[in-house]
Length: 110
Image 1 (cartoon, rainbow, N blue to C red):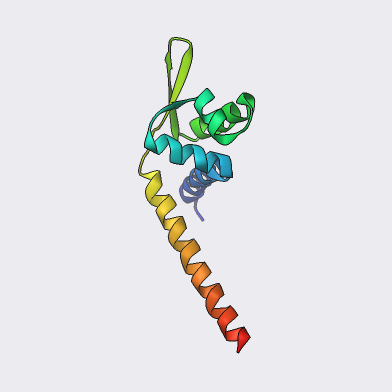
Image 2 (image 1 turned 180 degrees about the vertical axis):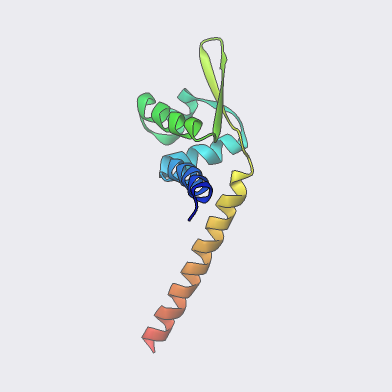
């Protein structure tokens, strides 16, 4: 692999790694619906503010989330809504894998 390809793959891995937590996936889904502040997300996730803030920081550093300060609150939004297409692709993989597992189980029961 040449240096340019390696750099590109590392950048992609950084984004995918940033999404690799159930709470962060939830945050992405919620921010796709509308912008939210930390307190809203904290209540929805059921975690403390520092944990949710850390998740948001990771997503922001990966370029997935933007923030905007308004008064005493910071509102977060999804910078790249097309990431939901990737989520749809993941759902297709899960569905396909589940179907394959069910076929194997049916075969084993015979």
